Image (tube, rainbow, N blue to C red; front, side, top):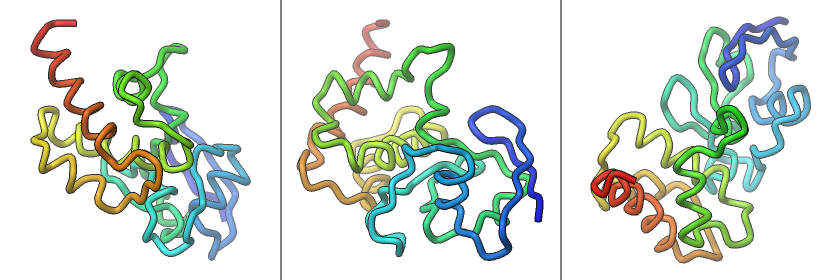
Length: 156
């Protein structure tokens, strides 16, 4: 069956199987390999993407569920070859480490920022609570988001 969606700012028509998982469509049909499979049960957050401005785990959704939706993966954060400010903040604050959880973590935080451009520390913690990270201890990730607020205050 064919579905239509906007993926990373581009309108696409994709042929999918009725029971095909969204993560499989993104990785195997569209080559969007930033979407990582961790647990396959929606518990680790490695496959988190944004659908209609909300963070979702792509391993727990069927591809047909995004018909008519706007989907954003980490590949879509860059604009004109420039990293998103959030990506830069992750790099500058050591919030990457091994990198396996990074795409999902970025998307969870980006979804929060789309809803709340000036989130509190508690809101950031809540936004990433579904993402497991064994390397960073979460503090650099929180610091990265806080650095965006400092940047805004200082006009950088």
